[in-house]
Amino acid sequence: MTSSSSAYRDAGVDIDKKYAAVQGATAAIRSTFTKGVVGDIGLFGGLFDLEAAGAAKGILVASTDGVGTKVKVARMANRLQGVGEDLVNHCVNDILVQGARPLFFLDYIAMGRMVPESVQAVLQGLAKACRENSCALIGGETAEMPGVYVEGEIDVAGTIVGVVERDKVLDGRRIRSGDVLLGLRSSGLHTNGYSLARKVLLQDLGLRLEDRPAKLQGASVADGLLAVHRSYLKPLWPVLQRGLVHGMAHITGGGLVDNVPRVLPKDVAVEIQRDAIPRPPIFDLICEYQGLASDEAYRVLNMGFGMVLFVAEDDVAEVQRLLEQEGEGSWRIGRAVPGAREVRLR
Image (cartoon, rainbow, N blue to C red; front, side, top):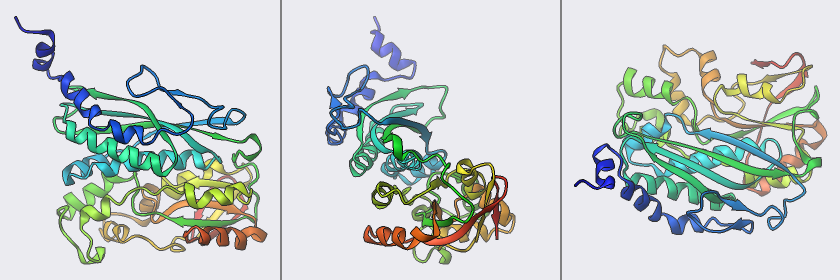
């Protein structure tokens, strides 16, 4: 008689491989456990003690996201650890713009057929980024779903929970006309615009991931596309603790045009210089394709802008000094002006 486990395996789901995938990364996961973690791997829910973490009196901030079709490029290049780092860093930045520091993270990894090595690579990346951001990886789900996911593909998503002190919440209310906009560089596409980038580079221009076009200055197409999404927590934290930032926008899907207005008061607009910040070469390679209009590029891609800060003119020098102490460059990219929550690219 066929056992239930082998019958399930014949249907396309291998439970043993699932558990083997997670067990292979237990040491990396445990290495992320911070002061507030209660219990161990394998519980039905992750436990976190806010009081032990010194966060009992703050406001919790939560966000969920994925890495989009960047994971397809990473799988093609066999570089899946990077997407684990991408996912954590992206989520860290999403709550950082509200003034929050991360507490813990939960992941979701799914595929049509379980490949333990792929899962372990993603988990190693998640754990690495969690350690670097002082964030505990306290739980997650690994799902094998034949018939839902295309054979060989993998999907990665996650949820972060952080905390912010009540008097340090950033919600845009402090932004005023006259504020200076400072830009922090991106490392590349981060985790957005990959459906367009793959079409332009791999399909329309016929490039391969191992190709090294002159525009990439010695890097391969894979290097340019898979540069890890940066976390801005470490360089920005001293600035946030001083209360020197009126608001921030993480430039993700929708670029400057869609993300900056999310933090603007109803009577404020912004003017931004398109070329105010150095662009990673991958953007010039994508944009040299004549079918891609500049306006669309700035709507789909971050175009080198990773984070935008709103700072009073009198505080700009101090903010830039603090960032430089953390090894972070910043550029004046524009100014807040009277208007109705719009971005005017110059």
